[in-house]
Image (cartoon, rainbow, N blue to C red; front, side):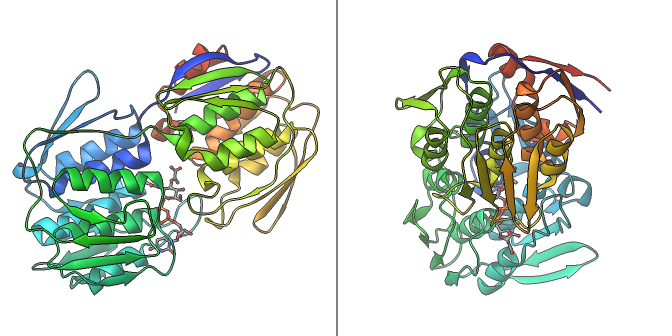
Length: 421
Ligand code: EPU
């Protein structure tokens, strides 16, 4: 297993290009299954989860061609299987995203149940119940979801909880259903919105995009000639590099990103003492060499503060001035980074779903272990400011969601290297 060795102390500075959003690329690649014509998708990030998705589609018989710029052309007309096997689903829960498209277009899907996960139980009942309401026949047997339907039927779905991939699965399924589907209490995350725009580009009829009520008028088939669609920039990658700069008292300019989808994060960085300037597609953060001030926040669905940035803010609070109180409301077990940060000298107390962190003067490098994607990112940013060297183990989690992290951080002046297994 690869590891990262990071020597703290460098104040980050410079410019960086942000990659396409993992959590938009995954549903959009799944949505290509709906198209009767080949589709080209661009601004795809170089990530392990993308490779897994390509393997998943490839094993179904879908033809994929990747060029040197990471544009992927997908042609699902060669499909031979409607199955997402356990060995792929267990490495990437987002494989569940093929359920809706397979069922809607081919009338059949067999998707392994994702099972437990490092950040909580994460059931998929809302995905399944929504599809049943649309007329699917679903059984769960032998660890698999087996779904069949002639043609799904539009209906009104009121989601009992806001779910990102749940909304995406039902949205994709509804595009080919007979009649109109209304999804209420839908997730409004920018990645859901990007998927909806992509579906419309393929010929779907979705309105209410960006709101919590999506209205989908089903069509008979999807697919247009020569469609190319570029994925939106990754707001979580953007936020992570902003924190990396803030924690080191640095100054960075991030390009090819979208400040308008990062309001809640930018607001907290300003509260931490950062000077933020933005343009249409760039964000600059300048700490003027100062230490950050501790911030308090609560995670919640978009447009509120994202759970995927919680761990990185705890890392920043660890060395900030004052006390920061961070409450996680989306996942019940998303504090695995806290114990590792404590091993680096952080003063954090956990009370149920809240982390109370009193900033310390310095963190000290230690061997630490990543447990999930964003937890790993928090350990890397903490290491950037720690005294001495930190060895971050199990970084396959990072490779799932951060495009060339060591190269990008090196570009900003960090001392970081990957050591192969
Ligand atoms: N939930 C249910 N039943 C369901 C679905 C969800 O109870 O059928 C619960 C979950 O257990 C959780 C809450 O609803 O408590 C919200 O979970 P959601 O379904 O929104 O999460 P997700 O769709 O599985 C996506 C992202 C996550 C991100 C969350 C929240 C993708 C591929 N994944 O997960 O990203 O944290 O939304 O914003 O889009 C990451 O990138 O590191 C990551 C974990």
